[in-house]
Structure formats: structure tokens, C-alpha cells
Image (tube, rainbow, N blue to C red; front, side, top):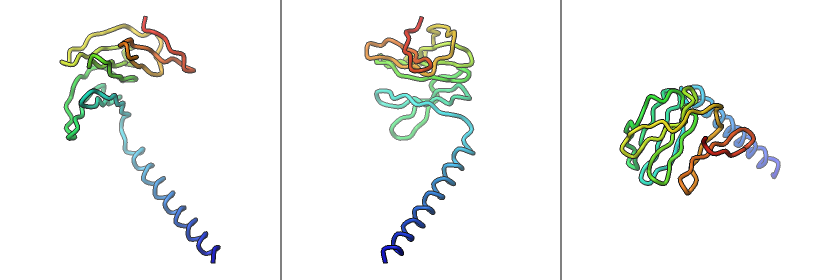
Length: 137
């Protein structure tokens, strides 16, 4: 009796795992570009890495293009002053996008960091390989 129950459980688990793997394989196969997400006060920022475009996504599901022309985007983070920092891996530059959409170059980047973040004081930091955190220079 217990053997029959266990074998049915294993069979259902295997079918479920196979379905999930197939579904995830389809998603990965058909996704064209990576996406990066940063949380804002009343919305989210979504960057299409390949296209170099940043969108604002509102709570009702509306997508609005916010800024573009960054090349390949390798980092994205929001700041306490409602600005957005975009790290362009292909252009090797860090950009600041103000809340009104005005884009300014913050600095050129020598080596490509693994990630960027803004601390609670508003200072931008780079995360290098092996987790080393550095200030922008």
C-alpha cells in the first residue's frame, strides 16, 4: 500500500519537474535580451540590456520609455534623490538620469564592474570581482 502511494508521488513529481524544465527552457530560448530592474519610489525602472533603453513601469502595468542611447547596459540602480544610475558596459561610462529624464555622464570606467549600487547617503559604489566594493573615481 505505501509502495503504491510512494511510486505515484514520485511519478507526479517527475512529471511536474519535466514540465517546469520544459517551460523554463522555452522562456530562456525565446528571450532576446537580458533585463535589469531597479525599484523607484512609485514605479520600477526596467533596462533592456541589449537595446540600451530604460523604461519606467508603473503599478498599472504601463511601460514608458525613460531614456536610451546607453549601448549595452551592465548596471542599473536608483538613488534617494529619485535619479537613476546606468552603467554602460559597451561605452564604459556611468550615467546619471535625473527624474526629469536629463542624462549626464558621471565618469568614464576603466574596468567593467560586476554591479553598481547607491548607498543611503547617495554615494555610488562599484562592486568588482570577488565582491570588492570601490568608490567611483
